Image 1: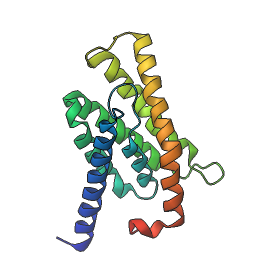
Image 2: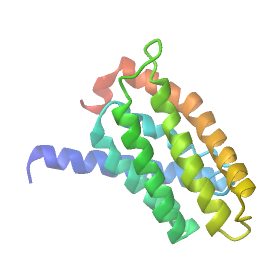
Image 3: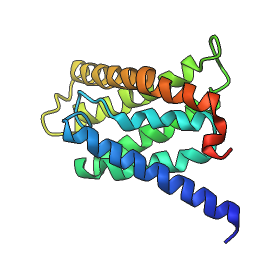
Image 4: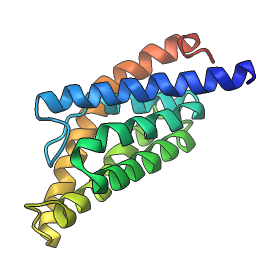
Amino acid sequence: MQSKQIRFITFNAVIAALYAVLTYSSAFFGLAYGEIQFRISEALNVLCLFTPAAIPGLVLGCVIGNIPNGIIDVLLGSAATLIAVTAMYFLRNLKIRKYPFVAMLMPAAANGLIVGAEISFFLPGGTATLMGFLTAGAFVALGEIAVMFTLGSMLYFALDKNPRVLGI
């Protein structure tokens, strides 16, 4: 294997491991699954603003992090992450005062819609109504906004000042 391939695999393995550990840490406090989510791991989504090479690790980490919640969450939650981080990457240069505001909203949009539908229609206790979907989606989106605009922003500014940290 070439050095670049080894670096890419290692980079994504570290991201996936960090994402999974941070998700499980959030779960310890009851904040990783369900309508009320404040996943510390979601702050790592900002990595894709600096390199698309982070996308596989973020999605794999989400897959691993969602295993305790079942196959539906593994599939739908990970699809939401893939959509969110891909959209973030493509919107990374759309900035307001040097801040990728629109890109930072993508996890809230994707997870609010997809995970909100998952909670409402597929999980036990879901209401399977439009109002249930809107409520679940709004709570998930609010949690995403809280994480992205606090922890995610701190990570973004730290990496923006020190891009060499990622080895790019």
